Length: 310
Figure 1 (cartoon, helix red, strand yellow):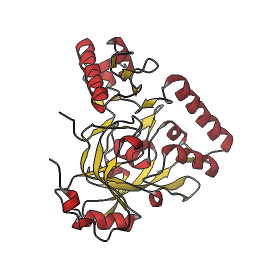
Figure 2 (cartoon, rainbow, N blue to C red):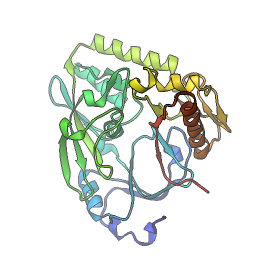
Figure 3 (tube, helix red, strand yellow):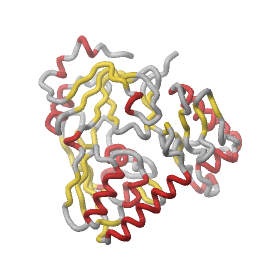
C-alpha cells in the first residue's frame, strides 16, 4: 500500500528538521541500489523528533536508517516516512574514565577513535563494524567475538508517542544479532562502558582489527557487510555462515552484476549496475543451496526494506 503523504501532510506542520519527498536512497546505501523513500525526515534534535512521532498517524509506516551499511533497499522504494538522524545525534561525551555517552547517529568506528583519545579500552572492536550506534544496538551488531551487548549500559529511545525512555541492558533483551527494542521506536543514544586502558594497547588492537578486515573482507566494494547471521553452532557443528556457503558451492555465484564475494563468501557485492532484486534473489539462492547441502536455514543479517517491483 502506498500512502498519499504529499496531499495529507498536516502531521509535518511545525517541524524544524529537513523534509524531502521522493528521497533517493540508493545514494546513501553501501550497495548503491534501491528505490526512493516517499518521505525522508531528518529531525533537528530530540524535541523535533518527539514532536514528529507524536503527530505522525499510526497508519503511516516508519523506517529508521543510519548510514546504509547493513541495508538493502528494494527497487520499489519505501512507503511512509524514513527517519535519518542528523548532526545533533552525532555527539560523543566522556562521562567517566570508563563510560561515554554516544548519540544514535555516531559511527561505530568514531567511537573506537574517541575511546583511544579518552583512554577507554574494550571498545576497539567497534572499529570493525561499519554502521551507527542506533543500528548496532538495534541488531546487537558485533565482530571478532564481541558485540554491543557486551558494552551497553543503557539505551535512550523515543517511542511512537514521542516519549523518551531509558532502557537498562536487562530490559533490552539482547541475543545474537537481535534485541527487543520496539520496532516503532528510534534509538537516540546509549551509555557505553569500557575499561581503563592505555593508548598504545588500544591503538594496536584497532590496527589489528583494521588489518584483518582489509585482508579478509571486500570492504572497498559496493557491499553491505555480512549477509547472513552465523547459525547456532550446535546445529551447524560449529561452522560459520561463510563455511556453509562455501561448501554449498556459492563462492563467486552470480546474478547479473550481483556476485557472492570470492574473497569472503558471506558478502554480496554489486559489481556495477545490479538491482536490489538481483542481490536479494542471489541471497535467496545461496540460502536454498545451503539448506539443500547442510539442512541449515540461514537467517538474513542484512536488513531488507521496501517493496519489490513486479
